[in-house]
Image (cartoon, rainbow, N blue to C red; front, side, top):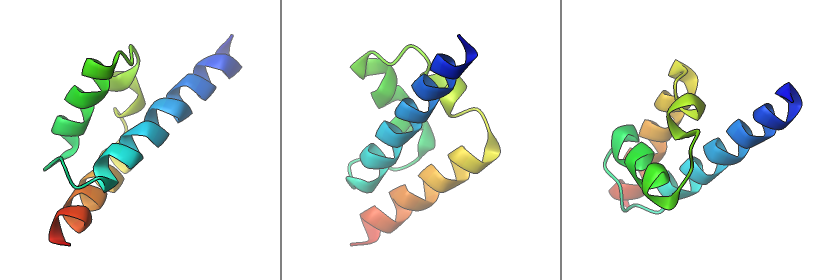
Length: 66
C-alpha cells in the first residue's frame, strides 16, 4: 500500500512539474490549485515538502520568463 502511495505522489509531482513548465501559473500555490481542480486528491501531500515547492516555483518563474 505504501508503495502505491509513493507512486501516486510521484505522479502528482510529475504532473505539477508539467503544469509549472507550461508558463500558465505564477507560483506553486497556483499549480497546487490546478492539480486539485484536475482531481488529484493527493495534491497537497505531494507538494508538502520544501524541495518540491521550491522546484515548482523555480519552474514557474523560468517558464514565465520566456
